[in-house]
Image (cartoon, rainbow, N blue to C red):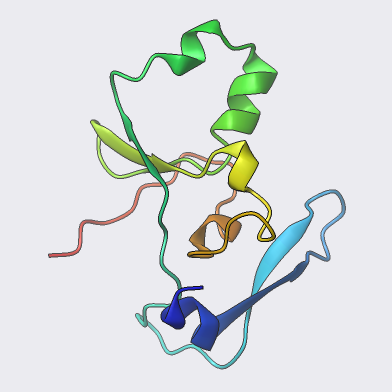
Length: 106
């Protein structure tokens, strides 16, 4: 597990019905502090895997899609949703199924 994630958060069952696992703070988090790292597979805007998927399949496949800009996104695919299978970083436990934009850090 990423040391930043390990210091700041833990995974537990969400209190919201039907949502599964959630991410919770281990300690007080200061404003603008880096809390977790989001890592995944690179998805280019030209990626056409979704072309042959149903709407439901696309929703599951791209559940953890984090858009960086109009050309690049990061995704944690379904086989890596559970922390028992993937825990290099825990940022994918924060996403909320909406089209999120992340800011470019320079």
